[in-house]
Length: 406
Image (cartoon, rainbow, N blue to C red; front, side):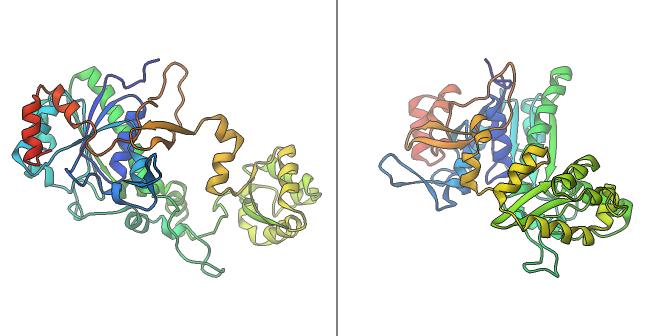
């Protein structure tokens, strides 16, 4: 079955994470993604290790785990965008491209004649997506940004972590670069939306995606808690600010997570615990009352769960239909039967390593396949192939290589 975007060509000028995450999503959906990298150096994330991908002899390659996590399905070419010849090649590649994706500082590509205004004159159907920390406009537009900084500036760290009055209290960042990753998802969604409209109008589009905008949007219920309740959201550890009981519970031999999502589930939990009266107690009978009276409910539940081991409670909660689970380590995640069944971990053929592990795209389609035939590329692995597709001769390619343009 043909992947959904098998007719789409993407010129990927982005690096690090947010942009490459977006282009990896497009590649998974079948797009031909041509990743443009610096000659001799490549994407910064190639050097972000250890760990590094090992070759078939067990020796480290030059590709770090970060790069391997975010560049599946792409073709890599090397090109010096600081040279007139490199800029001319980008323009040539844009003539039949559907998408350009970039995450340069605002104004950088305009100075090279590679901004949307310049390239859309060559190809009016071009969908051009710019990913930056702060967007194309505003007082901070020209400033660089990284995920950690945006987690802090965008309010995420203010609501992540334990309360200040508890051990380990204080702001925390999320354990994965969540703003980068979510920005990549939004960028890919915006690109697909623009391609859909182009199929109707024939016109391209310039998409402006800012990491700070994305993080502000991700405040979601916490933002509305403030906007409607006029109370500044605080860190609550693992406890949900709007739904209770929904947090970690310490059992006799470790922690579990329980997620009670409605009053019926709370009543079921109370029956399981032999505490039917709790479900009828006016302080706890509705979710809003449980949130208001969490300080008195918590000690009751904590004492009960501490009396039995995790296995006891997880089995009983599953039988009762109350959502609960263990707090898995990363190795345990990949051993989970559901994760194994969904084939979220696969190995793809790799020219240096023999094969490389990949955490797969979570999308599943009834009548279309994802692309799973192309591992993260070696630096410049496809340079000659792509330039030959442009009609360049072997002599021209060698000349460009000798002059370090590619």
